[in-house]
Length: 217
Image (cartoon, rainbow, N blue to C red; front, top):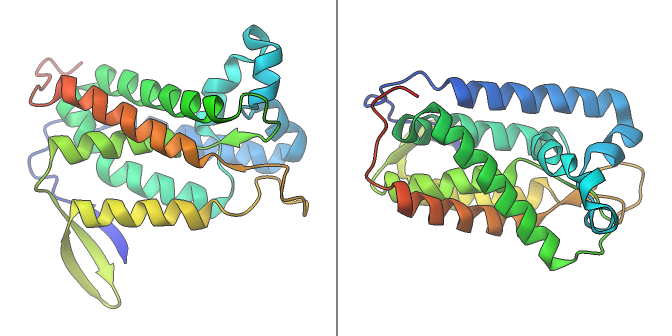
């Protein structure tokens, strides 16, 4: 089951913020590949390191949101951000959506951090922030349908089914190590962050549900 898109006929705005977020994630991944382990270690969020020096390490809370554990992880995340992010951005407005996305990412990081503040495992991924977007999408567009490729057929499925598939995708695509050096404990994808981001997205969407920004901001 491969999602292709949803109904954008009611979209009023060009999703500039969604485009920029996707672009930043792709650029960051290229830098990861080029910089290899030293780059990843420097810019990933490492709970134990943050606990020892919060002020010095605070920037990694943001940088880690744009990093990914592998090409499949990046591709899966960007596909879902592309399909669902534009609708939430259209409903909230550009700047509100940017704030929403970053706050969902912060909520995701906080959830992972509280799970093990002394962990030395690098945490990366836009998954938490995107999980927040998906949580908002469920509340804002509860009856939406998504076009998916099943075998050689394109069919319409409820968004809830497709979002459930995303959760499964995260589990499998993030199962590999972040730093591919044959050391399974050196890195990975922070799964608790998905839960934290989803909950944060739901909570914020409850505040904005039914509202729309008509000023284009």
